[in-house]
Image 1: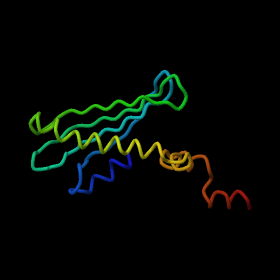
Image 2: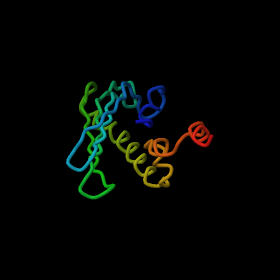
Image 3: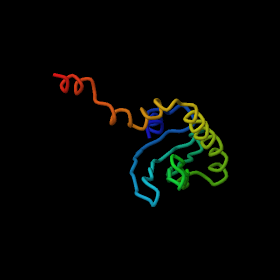
Image 4: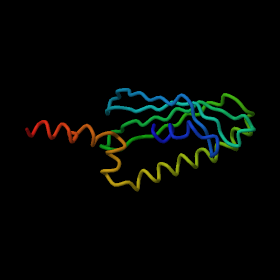
Length: 129
């Protein structure tokens, strides 16, 4: 979600986002995470915008998730929407490739696991007194 939120302030780049939100749903194999947003795709003068939904769905294999991406065109003609989405999808694909290169500690930090698992410095000091 943080990555999509970083695009809310930019009007220069491959896309701009708005109304980024996330939620969780329980499935047979664990928690599914869903990110939803509105995106405007460059070049912006084509007026292409879309609703984006990205889902991570746990599978029967531990720590293996299925990724589902739904794109719903809101504005812009169909041929432009298809053409400019190639760049959008490639940018998203590159982000997944970067994710795979992160060390476990870095992934945990992004997922918020480290902060939840380890007491903060203030908590550790208070517990030690």
